[in-house]
Length: 446
Image (cartoon, rainbow, N blue to C red; front, side):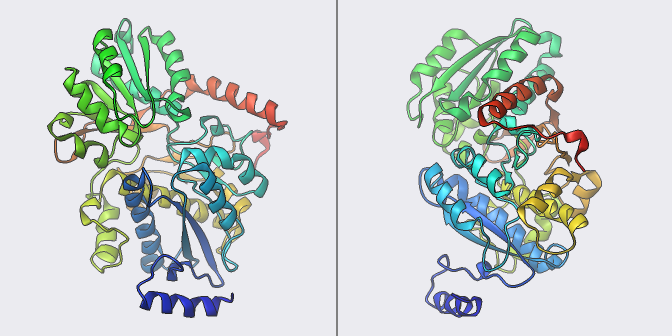
């Protein structure tokens, strides 16, 4: 079907009230960059995903309408429903990987751990970089083995380390961790188990007792786990849950008498949707976040003026503006945009393919000055990537739920990435051996 015919069809569909089958934003023309959106608006995790896509789409629309695109290159996008499954995630990737009507794919965001793991080899073969902010393969930090996989900003290893750094602050220093008990109540999945290695290493280094308590998916009943917590009497609980298991954990902890202000949720247990169902039990709950809640950042003022107030937002519920998940969508979109911008500095102000945007990602340097220029200062940490370092940040803020909204109680808490690096290289080395990969020499990378 030609682009002109698709445009005519889109107009007809919109007139009939059909908005998702062939959105006008997904109609590519020359000098356009395609942003595939692997979404999950239905299924068990839809309430988490819907505000994420709103943040991403609002930012892409802002880039087009206010900035005229990325150096004049307009952005087009199209959604594909994954239901947060590996199978549908692969289907969406196969549908999108060749671009749209001549507009190439620069980066791909799987938006889910199952798809991220399933697509690692496919994306590398197709030379399309995966961006997995706060999820996916931690060992992909090592870009010498994973040239097309970018777990940017905060891996699960760094998340574990940041929690320990924060607890040490509260206890009076890292030396005060000796003899403390830190329990991790975790989603019994690859995601939930990902922090076991770094926590074991940090426990050995600092002398705290490392207690691991699994919760079977979906986590609707947790009496046994919190009975175990009560018996162990930990000083702190690191909560690594997802979806319904988070509010169930908080309410069950309250029922068993464990103080909520001693529970620290990970980044997938840190949203408004995680605490609103808890009622009074959630007041005082702590959580890590690489994209804090709030609508007072400069980018929100710009998007409110140019997108929300003009009725162009993808948000269905205005109360979600500035929510943690909405903000995560903003940050995800901004990283992709800045990666393309960095690639354009070398390859020209035109649409980029995956290999060119990989170069852009590996030369991405978003410092404080750049964060201020794009309106993300305070919402996003400085980020510098390289061939050998595909994470680049490794910090999170701690926020606390006051019963109605999140309040930031720290600045960026930095992980001990130097201590974690040998674990990452050991894991990437095993992967390289299994797959027969000869690691790149990042010293020679230009």
